[in-house]
Image (cartoon, rainbow, N blue to C red; front, side, top):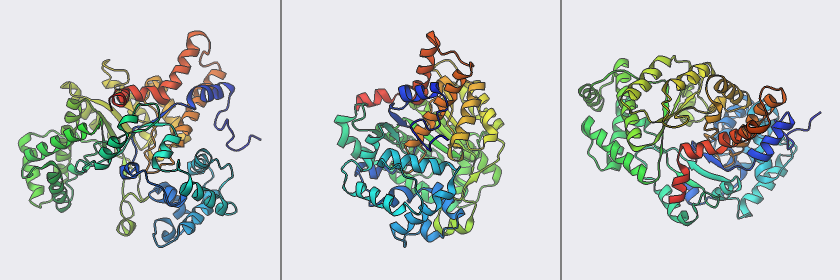
Length: 486
């Protein structure tokens, strides 16, 4: 019987082991999409306990705990002690076998704290005390220290256009002399997430947001033209702070035709407090999404689209604990035609930026893998990317499905690889999980005679692993240039 999570965890063949240990294991991490709080980085936050670091904001764990019968006061509640919440999580872990949380939990304990023991009710107190002692007293166990520990080279957070980015600016000023790309100080950049500027479903909430955006841009937003001016000012400001990526969270793609006068009329209607019809909403969202894409192309940014999440399904818990707390699921919109129209309209005008498409429903895998091939234009390798397995798909089976489908219908060699999509400074082992899975897939193909592994092809396979794990992302986003110029 193979030991649990030994050094060759997930590596089922000698070639897989060679590719991982000799090539992938020590490569730097580029985490180009996450939800880390930049304030914690700027202040080099020291965590009060493993509970804060592990359980605050982690809706993966929250869903599992609720399913295991843990009451909400121990899941998201603040009246419980750190020990009580950690103890509840430790009681859940043994029931999470075959869920990726079981692997992630033990990878994080081992990689960050050197703990090889399995977390369960019998070991909970010992592990809690060991982790907390390191977090409280070891100078390396801060927000920045953990990033350095995991050899993180660059991180892109997720930020609203109205954000002042003061924490990004403060961090960049503090570390300008060590942003060399060699692991001394990770590059931490904002990502433009303008979703709220197109979410006109609720007129009152939308108007409140537009007022906040106008204050940030120093524009009195009264017309649609004013809105576009404010967004451009903020886009330029984000660019001056190092932003090179946008990100858009969508239920589906929007590609309805709309003139400027129609857009202006729809904006006036919603700002006047009147509800848009379903067709009007689609038209307005189409206009905004296209405007965002054109801004990104003109700035030379990469645009990312995360689509297909059915959010806030539990209205009772939405009222009790709010959004992003573990009550979202996979949606089943049919979006191929609208995605195609959206991308084609931009490509036809020469305004299609480098693009990453992330689907949440695995039923869309082959569709997205073939869609990206429609808009590659030879200007750059892998200009249109199919993003890594996201959210419910970021586990071993989801990553294997994604990589296998991309291999069959595109070029796995040009894939920009993994990200954490996380709020936790302990989530970087997800890159290890991805790298082990990638090396295992390729290594097993070699062992079965499906791929050659001698002469030129041996070097190509080794370079492929290095590219997918690190170099493709480095050069796709031009972080090498940004790090050098910081």
